[in-house]
Image (cartoon, rainbow, N blue to C red; front, top):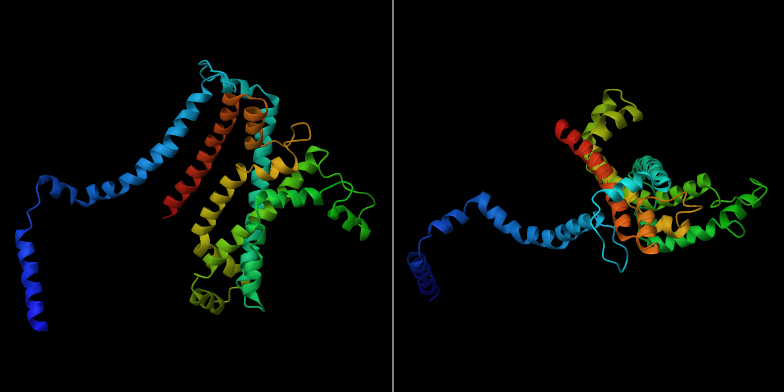
Length: 316
C-alpha cells in the first residue's frame, strides 16, 4: 500500500513538472543572481528611502531657510552655516565636542581593553562579574545622569563628602561651576556609561583568539606584553576598529548626559552639537539654525569613517 502511494506521488510530481510552463524572458532575467539580489533588497531600500532618505533631504532643505517655529521660512542658502561659524558659542562647541569625544573614546578604549583582558581570565564568579559590568550600560542614560548630578552636588554630593571624610580634601569640590570641572564631570559620566560596551565587545573578540598562538609565542620566549602586541591585537584588530567607530559616533552625538548634568552650562561653555542644536531649535525657536548645527557633525563623522574603513580595506 505504501509503495503504491509513493508511486502515485512520484507520478504526480512528474506530471506537475511536465505541465509547469517554461520560464519566459522576464523569468529568466529575474533568475539571474545579480538581479534577484536587488529584487530581494528592494523592500529594505524602499523602507530606508521613505523613512530615512526623505527626512534627511527635508532636513537639508530646512537648513537652507530662515524658518522659525510657527513661521514659514524664506530661502537663504548657506547663510545659516555662515552665521554659525561667526558665532563664538558655536566655535567653542566644536572645541568642546572634539575634546569630549577624543578623551572619552580613548579612555573607554583603554579601560575596555584592560577590562576585557581581566574578564577573559578564569576566576571565582567570573560569569557574575561579566554580567555585573554591564549595569552602567543597561541603566537608562537619563536616570544614571540624574544620579551622577546628585553625586556632583556641591553641598550634599556623595563624592565630595566621601573625599572629605577620608581627609583628602578640606572643602566640597565645585564640579559644575566652571568649564574645566564641568567638562571633566560629563567626560567621567560618559566613560563610566560607555566602557561596558567596549569591555563586552572586546571580551567576545578575545575568546575567538586561538590558544595555540599563545602557546607558540610562549615557546618562542615571548612575554605577556609581547604576546599582547603580536598575538592579541592582530586577532582583535577589526573588532577594535568597529567598536571604536561606534563609540565615536555615540559619543560625539551624546545628548542626555550633557543636557541633564550641565544643560550646556555654565554660560554655554559645555555645549556639544546635540545640546546646542536643541537649545537653538526648541528653546530659541530657530529651527533652521538648530538643524544646521546638527548637520555640521556629518563632515567630522564622514572623515572618521572614511579613514577607518580605508585603512581596513588597505590592510585586507
